[in-house]
Length: 176
Ligand SMILES: [Zn+2]
Image (cartoon, rainbow, N blue to C red):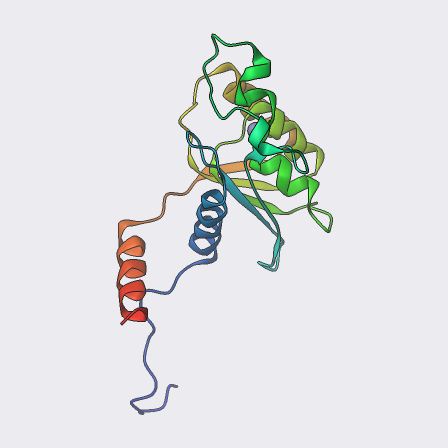
C-alpha cells in the first residue's frame, strides 16, 4: 500500500537496460574515425554491468597517418582500409579485462562472419543489434549460421523515437 503522499508517484520515461546499452554502443561508434562506416559495441554481463567496449579502427599502435581510409576495391588491398581495420567486436574482445562467457553484445551493426567466429568462441549468449543492412549477403548468412549452431540468440533493437525525443529534451534542459 503506497502512502498518500505527493512524493510517491510513478516514474515515466524510464530507460530500459536494452535501450541504455544500445545507446552506449552508439556512443562507442562515435569514436570510430572511419568516414564511411562507424560501428560500436558494448558487452554486458548478467548483472547489467558493462565489461568491455569497442569500435572499428586501425590496428592499435601503428602510425595511422600512413594508412588509407578509402574503400575503393579497384585498388590493391594494401591501399584499402580493409587491409588494416579491426572491427568493433574484435577490438572489444581483444581489450576485455575479463571473460565474456554468457555476456550480451550490443552492437550498432549485425556482426560480420569473422566477428561471429570470435563472438561464438568467446561464448557470448546474445547479440542485440540496430542495423542488419548486409542481410542476405554471404558473410551475413554465415554469421547467422554460426550463431544458430552455437545457440547464440540475436535480435534487432532500434531506439524508439520517444527515447530520442526524451534524450533531446533532457540534453536541452541540461544545457540551460
Ligand atoms: Zn566484423
